[in-house]
Image 1 (cartoon, rainbow, N blue to C red):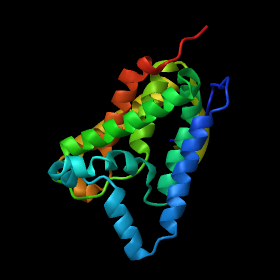
Image 2: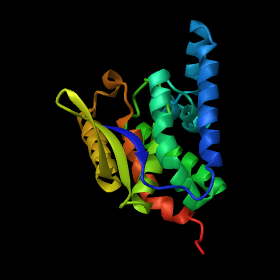
Image 3: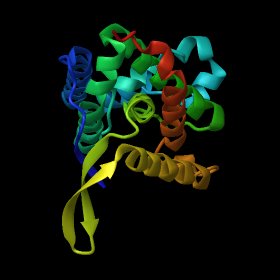
Image 4: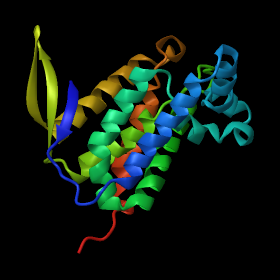
Length: 217
């Protein structure tokens, strides 16, 4: 299922959402400009590696944040930024730009922390904004459970556009991540997907989002 747009309209321009999209894009463009050895060193320095954080948390703890702005390819970047574009504006509207930024970084850090805790021996670099964006999705389902998501859905050999309740769309996404995470226990290196980062980010976003909401008149 591919989300196309949601039914909510933001009452303010999502400045921080666009700045986050720009920051992720600029970092990826920088990655593209690196040669093979340079890129490998860059990923090694700033991506989250659970085994390395476990061994030296004070030295490498910053990678919980730096890895949020890195991506492994165009599809990885575009898919993450598209989801952030669709769901981030409404969450930012309810929180305010500064609180939304703090919330976003906190969700990403919590996502990386859970991935590290559950896969402490993994030496596979973890990178991408999906953990932080999962936090945005958790906040969205709390704030707008009755919203509808216009979704591109494959039905046999055809693609159909269907409006799906946000509660179902995001709930289905979370359950799929949970099952994938449980199935990947002990095989994270082979999978190469940080399922637990997605799960952790979503749960943190769902639970702590009320703290960040601005008062409504």
